[in-house]
Amino acid sequence: MTRKTEIALRVVTAVGGGYALAAGTAAALSLALPAVQDRAEAVLTATMAALLPCVLTVVMVFAAASALRALAWTAGLTAALWAAVSLLKSMTGTGV
Image (tube, rainbow, N blue to C red):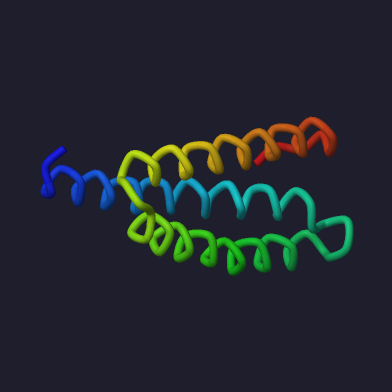
């Protein structure tokens, strides 16, 4: 893989994966936090907390040994997080 292709894949992984992880984090926390907070406060807290995985994904993608490894890690974490969202939706009976 050429250097330009490697960098392009990292950028696409960082942007797309960061967004997917942030959205999944916001969705999961929005479903989980109403047990301890009001619904509106839970959504606000979840939205603010979702910025952290987005930033950490960018750092992780550019720190990984290879672009394909970064893509694999990001895809795996995203799939696991969205599976948790699906589980939480079925447990709470609500939709996102």
